[in-house]
Length: 211
Image 1 (cartoon, rainbow, N blue to C red):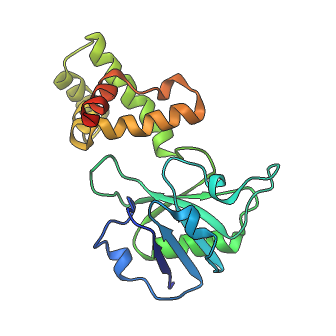
Image 2 (tube, rainbow, N blue to C red; image 1 turned 60 degrees about the vertical axis):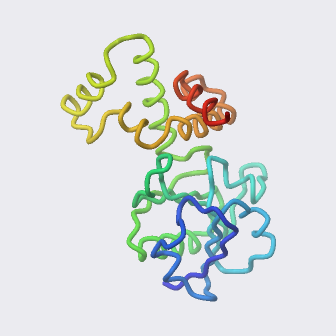
């Protein structure tokens, strides 16, 4: 299915050179708005289906909300990416209670047609992966602070014991503790759940980055 792209700059889902950008059309019934200023661009977009790239925020930040009846031809999405690691193949597609089923089907068709895996979810901060993953990573950092075991032994235990491809500490070191802080802090502010409060080591990495 054809799609057009409006790039407002700084997309985390589709960085410069991504194949998805190169295969877009100049005009189409599906318009994908990416970058840091999608909310501003939305005001002038006319299309049967509109996809807005999200950070940790809800889609409702851009479309508004109304007594649980929100929803239209506008959907949110984010391609999962840990820190500065390359984007994964997973795209989380965000719908609202009254999202147009035809728009949802068109959005899924565009993303899957580009070879991406799609998981649909309702409109919550952080969507699926970050809601499940970030408390686990925070817990691993806190156990390291408590001296439960060394970082190497914790990583080895989860790799060999549970079959994880990479231990949590190695994962965070590879993708960026400061980036983990940014996501967990945003989720903590949005949800008020202590499980998302940035662990000490992530906060230290953030402070060092700010110097």
